[in-house]
Image (cartoon, rainbow, N blue to C red; front, side):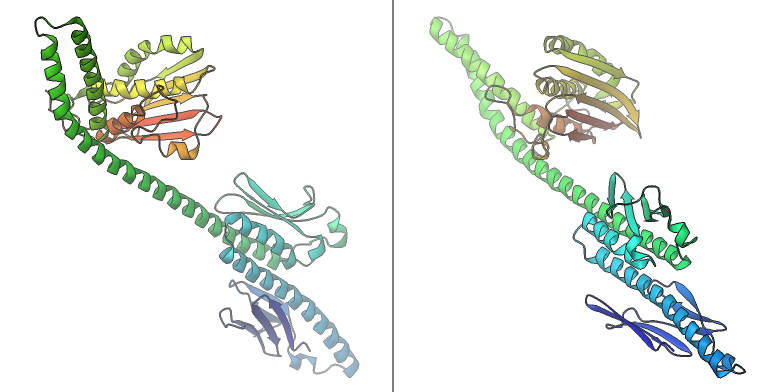
Length: 446
């Protein structure tokens, strides 16, 4: 009678010991010890994952009453059957153990799924003929020459996807039922393990994305504090220069050249004052006169001044304006949000294209979406577009303050602005402003 079966799997060492009354499966480190016992006319074997397998067995006492030859023949047949069945169980257990190790130790989801695909056919009775495929989302991993029209064993992956094991067509001639019950259990357990790995991978990606957004928001907050501080420091001397320049320009008997110089000083001061105001808005420190704002109406009115620029640039303008909830804000600032985003979109389409502007409502927010078919942006550029003075335009193409001001205005209203873009595929800006939210400085300037 079979005394033991021994197998090795890298640093693991599994052993099955078969006696007349007991079966034991153990690992060298003791972590996966399992056992079973003879019960009635079946041998009960418990797998690494908790599954239980039955193996035909016959207690020695039942051989009494047979002739020695018959008893010996029956014993040899039973021994061969038991050996074959146990060999299949060992393959399945080894496969499960290997899959568990791969999923735990792989550096990424793709590497893990490729490892599972390589291991899975080894757990089936016709290993040389078996093929496997995993489909998760838009990704697919399979062994070479996977038979699309073969005999399939399909198991859904709870996280989304399919795990398939296949034999080539015609296997039914050799074995009408090529998939054993225990092999079905193996595939079910493997699909559950794959699902956990997929969920872990998705969680890790989401965590990384959130950490990146948090770092980006922290940088913007730091820059905002710095910008607001610098703006406050510049305001006083700038106001002094502007005031005295205007007074000097009105002095009687001022030479013509001096008058022209004073005009240049005044123009430069006004430009500088606008920059200071933008920095204050970015830092959330700009006074604003708030009122109930209807985003649809503001966009409908403001877009009229941008239509000629779109026509000149060969840009098709598409409007999808629907009703939005009211919110508290300065309508002039909301118009600045629209203008800056649209102007950036127009500049991103030097050869023409399509610009879509949409308003709507969702989850208690007023929503503005601006989408273009322009040159798009890389991930590195997206991370910097709201930083003051950052620009991808050449000299004279812009100050790099437009989107910084947009971010400051939206943030001061408790809203969010998100960007989706890829090089050569255009960009999509989405602004969400909470309905009826009163600004922190409501009443100032009223």
